[in-house]
Length: 188
Image (cartoon, rainbow, N blue to C red; front, side):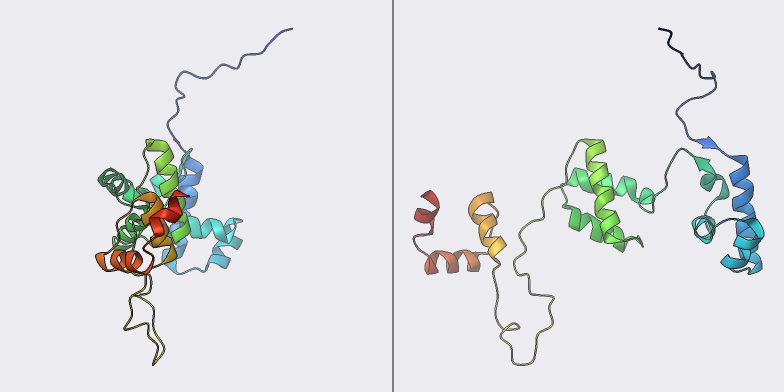
């Protein structure tokens, strides 16, 4: 049985390549947009889809014409994300900080991107810490007890009991006063 071996040219490596054809297309799209043409009009003139026009409407044409890499809105924040990872931040705290720095993408994409960075770096973000009250940001109806009461969540209690997270002193005192035999129940 004979096996065929494909030879690769010596000047080929794993770096992303540059496409002259794509570069010209990106420049032309951006030029039409500067002239005030609509997506539909550009699509008809060039024979491409409107999604392609949206993809290349802004940015450096040389970077946009590279192939072999997929660009993300989170790429400019990569160093900051690594810094947050090394500081032991949670994913939620990191995503909030990225939004404060100007990220405009979706939250789900941000979390997915952080997961990919975790895999790549072989290091994981800290779990979300216990939040003292989950109802602080909610708007209350007139006459409700929500504004004057402090709540502890069931998740907060479970995390304290089984994951050794800290509780506010008021919450700890309330639980131990209300359920003095709680540790006996856990031991069973």
